[in-house]
Image 1: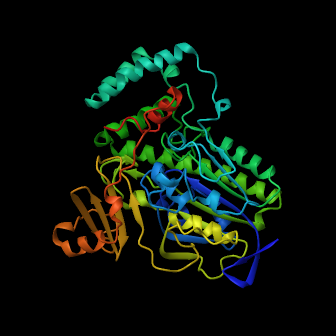
Image 2: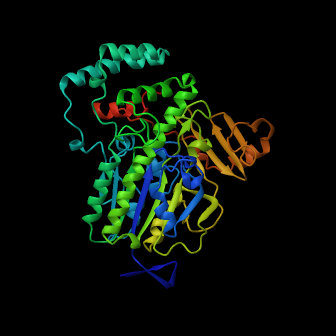
Image 3: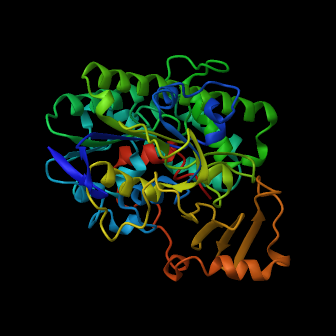
Length: 462
């Protein structure tokens, strides 16, 4: 079967597409961008087979609940349109089997469906992936859930930990898997691929780089081997009391984080091996990126709570296609954004993107001024734009402005002395985005999902 692509004079056979997203991976922790550790060697296979590395890939949300819906729907307000479409699933022809396989509790607790997807599998709904939890453990967990948040909100974290260790043993507290391992996620992805005879478009989301780091790795590649309870306590302390984290603890957090990326890479390589074994690799386009970055105290906080600073919005992105993307260099320095992925997938499958998609094919070299929404650190809508060499962040009645050429780390706010530039950049953002704030964590979730959300850091923010 052939389909028209761009021009009726140019035909392209329908291929497969694999979209891989990594949770909370920042670009400057990958060797492909100059990092000293080889944390994601799986990406080398994309580069070495004629793929493209995007140096300025920008996300459209600072956390999963905004960024992944934006990727899937090519809209800034994708969290609203993910259930009604259009989405990647609904935009592709009926003879392309679409699938979504992910292990993100936060995403699954907010969105129980993706418009148009033939297959939608989330970790929360996979009851068989959890071991049975004894009633005594559940009761102990409820007791601790009642005590610890109150103590943490008063800043008495050490006292809270004493209560935890003295009253409720760690073996009773941490009994439910925080998220599905990259090993299991890969197994499910390979099962989808092996069970599909028609062309496919599969989105796979790996959660392991998210806090708590290296929780599923048998032994971390970098740093000491900590037990589960120690890792969880370190994560909780960094989340609730970031100002108490010293240099040694920060280094330990980074060791664990890098180890989690390396562990995930091993299973991405296994997924690639499965494509090769099934003789699908050459005919499959692969896009590998992240839903957002991660912070290690650059602006006072850890994980991904903060405003849309560089450490949160700039992520890795790689793409390989059967034709080798001949119109692009191996390293693209011009900006790209997650909004661009959905229309690219449409073009790869020979169809025009829906009018509702706002992004542009990743292979098209045109001006982009990425907009990013969201922040757990604010109770007002937060929206940012990168344009004209500046980073503009709007925070309710306040704003921040950074000249990225001389201040790429965004440490020197220039907003007070550049009012004209503030007005110019603000005018580039649609008005509706200044009044919309993501709804955050859903109120109605199961006890097990609420526990996972807490240990992922979504419920200990104050």
